[in-house]
Image (cartoon, rainbow, N blue to C red; front, side):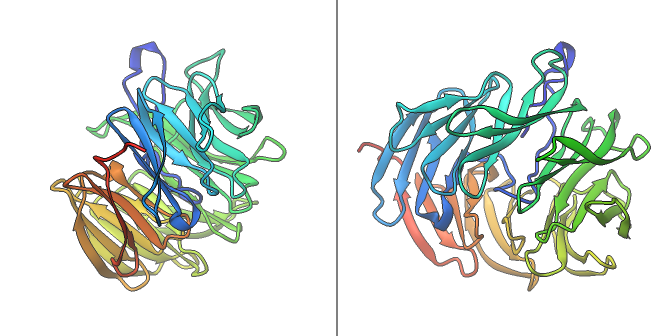
Length: 367
């Protein structure tokens, strides 16, 4: 989750985070590199990094106060987000080389070439406001650092070419009371400027996503229609009526459809006309982790059962046991999912079949 600090009086509030266009899309204690060649996990204040083919332990890193981790696509860096606020990017093969990104910073994903990191940071002057940041991994420099003027971020999406950011903002209590009005914005990351902004009548924006071709953006307002618009102009493409707010949205790569995770179901809609196809019933307290490509959803229930759902076929592919949703992550291409299962075992399996790729006893973390 984004640790959104909204002033001293309400620092305990945090808004749900869903990175809907790039990255894992879920705060996780497990991380994978591209091709799932390396896997990392947090356990007992230590981050252990393994080679998945040989099961060799590559590194043990100090994870005291760590809340989540993100691995770069090339498997060379790991971003360690702390509970107290602040992120450190460490070179896995040489842990003495690291960059601290500053207090209040949090990284959500790396660029495709692993040279930049995307996330947010508290405005150092007005610490109730969130700034959108793109950091140079080698130096820790924030370029650009965009003042959003927002106090909470429900969902952040980045276009595939990494030039546009879309933010859904707003916050409401668990009882449904609106504490802060919602807003939807898109930003040009090259020019560090706002493209367009919408304020939907004090209804929180709960999720957003950018299509893989960079032409469409979708966002959800609380118990209101899901809007699909042209990314550059903001012109409406379709409107999908809903009676409940979306937890997250993800476009399906190369399909012209999008997956919407609601409170009671996961459903697939055509973005052009809002027509609904496949759907899966879920419980309100189930946790859902979407693959980057949008083709798979991992649904983790409170009893620890993981169900893998194929959004294109509408079928459950396999089920397994896992400790918690925070111990689940997909590889960038969506072909592998890794999770910590009961019995001190980290599993990596094929998302399309459930076929085991590797099993690592995580109780043995001595090189």
